[in-house]
Length: 552
Image (cartoon, rainbow, N blue to C red):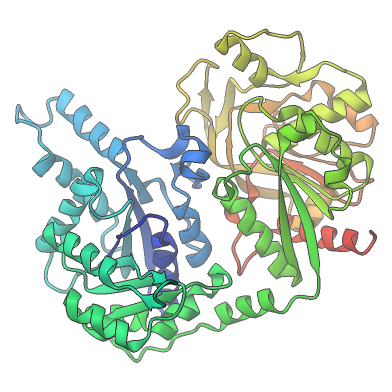
């Protein structure tokens, strides 16, 4: 029987519901149970695929090609369970499904309403996969009291009533702020948040109280009394030095005990937290430090590159090195010399992105790394910019560019320049046994090359050595590809196309063997990195950065 845990949030946003859900999933796994995690988001976008990173942070991509919320990345990193397209839903998808069914006559002429039709659709989504795992953890996005979240709260209230007693449990994450002026922790926001939740028919079984410090027993007892829960069900969640200490911290605060007690399950099952303790130990006891310059266009919000940041931390864990990420806005290099910014860095990384803004700055950064023998990692657009730079500098095609940017100017009414298309729009590709076709003018959402695709690596190449394999699968999210028209000229200058699609048509990896570490990949390796299993490319990139740090 699958047991359901619903995680809601109150008081303010960004309290860490996703981290709480992920850490709880890891704790339940440590006790020997199987888990699956899901995210229900109230926004009306069908998915985050067309949302600005400044609005919503990064878009996390699953193996089966779903564009999802960044919390799905937390779930995967903490539990190691690969998410599916059915693990993330939005109001937009729910309403689209209901309206499509209505247009087909699926409701037989009924008047379509939020209750029961929308709530039934949400419940069907929650119920999918019932019986596959011991626990299904469902996080509700947003904050209790938000008008757009009401259908989801109503749906989970109904879901608990539809199922037998003891199958569902509600966890509410709240804030207990500390007021410096009076030197007190204030429990009133939590009380009001629980009251708001109770007013829509949900009484939380467990409260996870975020605060700057561990809650004293006096405050826990007060919250328990006024929120109608046992003191043992008030779990303190203080700020931590790093997120990977969360499973051990939550265990020490009794979260897994409270959950099992809420389900009347065995409280004495052994808990294997040694791997998490080892991760924390490797983070806290390092043998050195490296500085990695991340040259991007969304550097004003680190959540826009959440998986990149975590994968670098994982690479640091693998090498027992502290990674200091230095975020640099790519546009700066379009006006200034990159040397003062980059010469003291141990490595340079250019992440993925879309659009022309900052592209020339990224090209300059890639050229600086190549010319000055600084370890370089180009991901997705980062690889494309590196190839454009090499075609310009090594092959001599000064107007080398990307079809993406000229199309962008054409749509916006700007001046379209003459260019040599080193990067072009991908119109057709193989997905398994099927051929997929796309037009440059298609809708933006879910029309890219999305999800897991194989790459064949050249034997004897650096990447084959790093992967210890010649056939790998990685996740993609892009609409444009590197053109192979300059492959021969680039290879004559020492550039190696060391990874290709199985049909040999699409470049997946380029590298420069005669360089300390210069690799560009068309896919997103950061999406598959885990603290226990760092992605081999990130682990080796950080190793190369550490070697470089001893040369400076």
